[in-house]
Amino acid sequence: MKAIRKLSIVFWALAFFPCSTDAKKDRPNVVLIMADDMGYECLGAYGSTSYSTPHLDKMAEQGILFSNCVSQPLCTPSRVKLMTGKYNYRNYDYFGHLNLSEYTFGNLMQEAGYETCIAGKWQLNGLAYKDLIADWNDNTRPNKFGFQEYCLWQLTKAGKQGERYANPLIEQNGKIMERNKDDYGPDIFSDFILDFIERKKDKPFFVYYPMVLVHDPFVPTPDSRDWENPEFRYKKDTAYFKDMVAYADKMVGKIMNKLKELKLDDNTIVIFTGDNGTNINIKSHLGEELIAGGKGKTIDAGTHVPLIVYWPAQIKEKLVFNDLIEFSDFFPTLADLTQTDAESDGKSFYPLLIGGEYQPRTTAFVHYDPRWGEFVNRHRNQFVRTLEYKLYPDSSFYHLTHDKLEKHPLLPDSLRPEELVIKQALENELKKHPKWK
Image 1 (cartoon, rainbow, N blue to C red):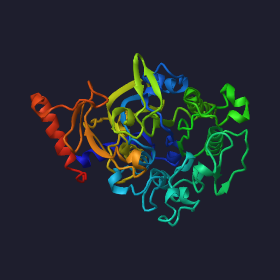
Image 2 (image 1 turned 90 degrees about the horizontal axis):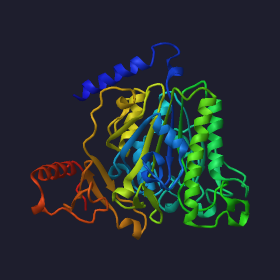
Image 3 (image 1 turned 30 degrees about the vertical axis):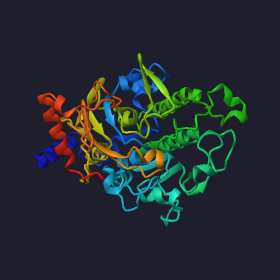
Image 4 (image 1 turned 60 degrees about the vertical axis):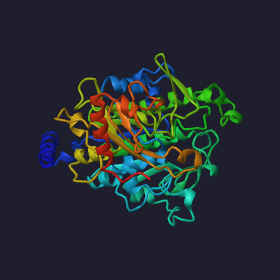
């Protein structure tokens, strides 16, 4: 069955990529944007009434809106899973670190002939474990992971040495950029991406943009009234979160406008997601529902993130996809796109993007061991879930449709026959993974 599925994908790919000397140029470009600490409830496309996200909403109106994308609950666990397509128990060793033995989607895309770059938040050199990680100061690590060019915060300099927003400390292609109190990190990252796209417009390119927005500290953006006073530019207040969401949306619009200007938007796949749920100090309205951010927790608000895919050449009308996607799925999707035979724990959703046959996953699995401080580590756990039900290794079983906060585990003697079947299936799924300790 697996061989038949792979053969079908090859036929779809051959149909889309003509067999000519221009085939490489005709490949779709890929721009993967990932916001930092932005749950699904922050986007108007999902019904948010707290924030303004017109560019992302427009993407959703013209692409695929995924209703149930499941991330890891925290930044590094999500980034490692997203970039490698592997469950965390296979390759997550330290918070803020990605082992050089790993093969990322940057490597995959570069080897497939794409021009590659990354801009935004790195935080994968192991800066918090300098006594254990010998190469923490290696500023070529993004290159080794497949990114030919980079513009990054927290590569070899920790956040305490320089922040990401006003007067940012950024490393670009081997050099530390000169700092300026009037600079704003997200502008520098997005301008770098626009320049890269301009220079590489005649070749297939892969851009990975792990945003620094909307992570705390919650501070003014250049569009905030308080930005005019330099003394207020790192004034912390959750009231600025709304401005930060709007600025993240503005950065997406900036890239989309550049693609249109260069007439690249039709055959560029733009993917937008978030690395985990919103900060726990933020409360947002989704219609009449008030949602408290769940970052760091395994509840829905910690792992339910936005996912929008825009690709006019293939996606001709809006589609809302309600089945599960998990973060291990991005890597095999890019592997299918490039016709690369690469191992992963995920399930490619590339057939869905080109209107091919796609059998949705019935479950999503999360192994979460952040290894980052007592407060965060107390939420470490595993779970497997369907759209409606969720099971943990201690047999805690929840009906998510009626209990998103997981306050009321279903008691064994109260389960209906169909729920017993679902629970048994989830127990069998958990057994496929290392036993949780």
